[in-house]
Length: 298
Image 1 (cartoon, one colour):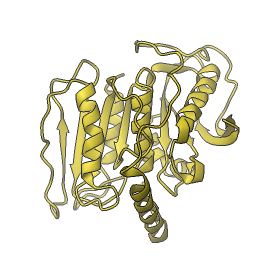
Image 2 (cartoon, helix red, strand yellow):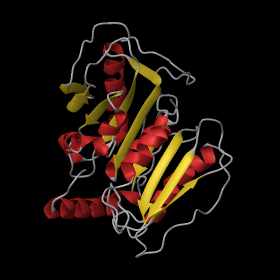
Image 3 (tube, rainbow, N blue to C red):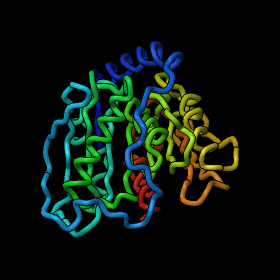
Image 4 (cartoon, rainbow, N blue to C red):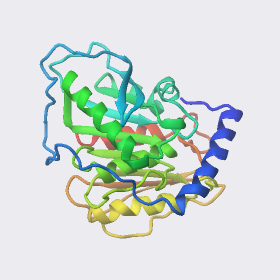
């Protein structure tokens, strides 16, 4: 389970407040290159790395994006088998966080649930954020994907992204920009901070948000959720949300969505936090919900 010191959490709140003030009002869609190799999602769509001796192993890697060096951490499952197609899950950090924080937090506590059936990647943002200026963070993701698919055995119909706060905003941007690449995304307390271009195609969408979030108020989460309520052709509704002080969460699974494109929304009684826990519970419910969301496509 992830823990945050008071100093780190305060810096995150202050930093995100600055992001909100400078970006959320004026920030439009970032310029994003056309999606390379756009395709229709297919079951068991294997990467070119399947059946080959792996050319990469767990560790930190670098790539150059528009003249700037970028880094990411790759975590392979134990006893990686190049003949077994794996899920690929990106975990994007929050503002002020790092790829190391995501790794040390077991990828938002999702990694233990994967039971060595998923490959995880933690990218590092510029200035510890995901401004996605000129689409650079989308290009960064494209380059990571090219390397990983060539060197590892990945089921390309099961590529996912998740993140909290700025990391959730980046995951939302990827759903908008690469709908034919990402099978689904999980956005924890996100907003439109990294752009949404083009944001017109369906993608399976999981969103959660605290009703007492003062950094990125819940209405910002509702707004980006509704992008995919519309794109996924779900029936419009106003989900029930818990009362402040109730110590509970309420999950809504939208009805009427196009096949394979569900929208889940969980509002919880809490502030700006990634792994929400109900009153009286000993562990957060978030990891199980996200893993269930991703696993429904197995």
